[in-house]
Image (tube, rainbow, N blue to C red; front, top):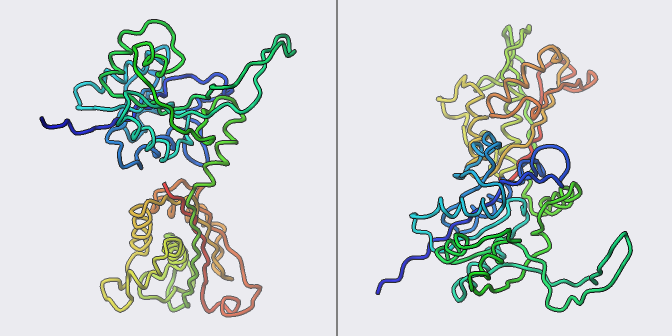
Length: 380
């Protein structure tokens, strides 16, 4: 008999309102270090090589947020178990053999936890991560301790809770009541559930203070790159200079093989530097005539695309133009807008400013313009 190939789906539950998390959007759509809680959680499952499909379960009121996800979604119900049932129903007929049911608000889930749950499902119909209770437990009333509770054999449950798909689908269909989680549903159907090791980072964001705690955890795992670029071009005859993609009237022009956009060149080199990819000359040699008088936006777009291909997003760009003339201030906003447009960023992610060299050096003698730039890249 041919064994059915294993096909694993992650069912990410995100239909709750999260009222205990304070005012504002539901917690799964709030930002953590520049990305939404949901984006971090989805990324963890997308990166896991054993997860074949991902399905989000969202609230009908969150249609705009759901549409912006890079995974398919269905609408959930009024309770968590109703949302899980909706997700399981949507996964039927797609050859799913195992399902990992996870709270979208647990953005700190690790690859190791996902792997451990999947491995446990080789020998048991259900598995879930948990942490043993180590603190003393009290009973209390009216802000006073009224007794203690033995903590022996007690665990703090986490997700993803994994199951053989057909078994948990049938268990949810037969269950009545308001279960605490999917393990309760499975056990009511007589399914054995194994415990695997959880992780303190895999907590569920519940209260306002949890966002700061999760941000500290996620920052520790982020891949952040910084690059700097520096470029110089001398003046030559002409009636304008091109700086950061904007033509600025001037009594001179800048000399270069391309359009000599010193600002755009510095930014391009900063991005290449963050990627350890050399400089413009490596990718667009000045010895090649096809780049003669080329628009420097070609170079910048290439650097941005290279960053994207390597899995990085540009967080911000800072460019300083160094010259006595022309005056940059009247054109700075247009330069930021143009650079943002070329890079696919918001204008507030791009800074363009200017300084003089106090009449010192070649810029002080108005022999040319220099630019220095910094680029920050974040692994997505």
